[in-house]
Image (cartoon, rainbow, N blue to C red; front, side):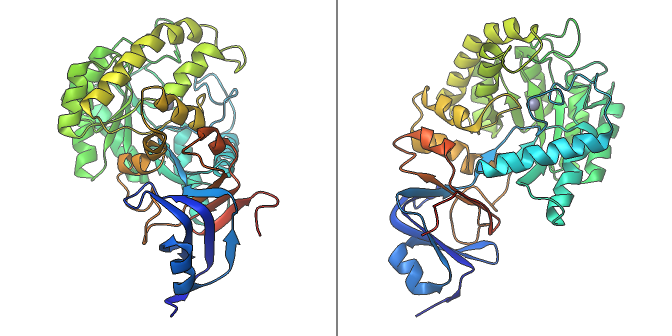
Length: 401
Ligand SMILES: [Zn+2]
């Protein structure tokens, strides 16, 4: 008996659902109208649904990857966000759209963008929705709110005082952002002389004003927060997500776990800034700062894990999603849990029930990699098939049988 036609059936020897079903052997996913209509044993799925089947021998199907912190401005001159570039905004839109397509081909079907020059993320999100360009699902913050001369001021709205900060947040809420991003401390990628990741930037009062207007609009607030005081201030202001959390203490971690505040540590970008400074053409001044914080960041992420803080994978321009997943495993996190941080964990942080797992009713974001990524995470670097919201976006040669 058939339940009906499927637009497509994907089958493989292994399916990692990142959901309750875990690992399914000899499995299949039926896709209908861009949504997962069935997932289970291949024999059951093909008995229930008729449709064109893409068989992937010796592959594993898994949910599309979610990058929870990526600005989609590449790694070159556009990525530095120093505010020294004078290109037309339209140029940034093209750079952004191109970066999105590249991410999609690598299996990243959702990108959370925590701050974007000229709120270009919102324009590209609309262009993707209208079919003008391809790209991952975007979870957008528009322009970040930062103090005058603050971290990321090249792409952000500079605001001083609670009223100005609330106004800046409202301007982005009016444009339709999914969350608001603010800068609670200096960063590792310093943008002015004297900037330091341990320096607090927006005050508790300023951030509280942003949280108040965002909460009223039903949107969470994420804080770039590196130093101890910046993290403390962010938590006191009531933000929902800490980005980086380099100097996060066990006390912060316990508070976050108890209050549902989540973390995107962006480990691989800090490693890349420290170890690949020249290769990536980054400002030399970033290198000693990144080198100094690596052991601190390691201890703080361990504290977050010990406390049970929810976390997700984010690459922040210079990191890499597979490097991030693999770095998670150096903390004793299992391969399955590390992949889950880059799938279901990303959906949790984006507060969405549309993606992140292979479950009936979710958008059909499905990727295939050779072999078994749970046994060898390097397999995630060789994405053979990408289906995003039911559309085949990438199919490597020789995959279809
Ligand atoms: Zn960032």
